[in-house]
Length: 136
Image (tube, rainbow, N blue to C red; front, top):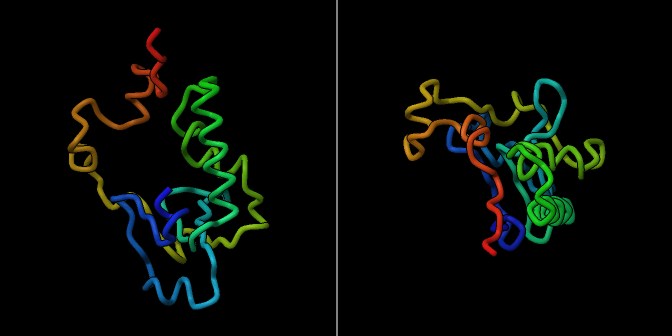
């Protein structure tokens, strides 16, 4: 939401750039997304100017996912599953991860998720609902 209002760059805490931002973004890009090894879009790096139509579509889809509460995994509710379902990979400005940003700088999950003693989100979502049911 911050990117949609103000523009900027988002990186997961365990991600790092492979090239300086100025070289990656240049002066004419309005957005930049990352493609994984498999060729899918990921959300661990997002660069965007304010009021992006692509981010608007993703935000609307995430809100709909939360309201419907029919999906079970974070990946598909708010994560890269949404990006791949909503965005046309050939219609967005994207680069392969190795040319922009890689993820996984932390190899020890304790340090990666130090604020979450229950562990990594993909294990936690098996025990706790991703979207909390509303109180009656």
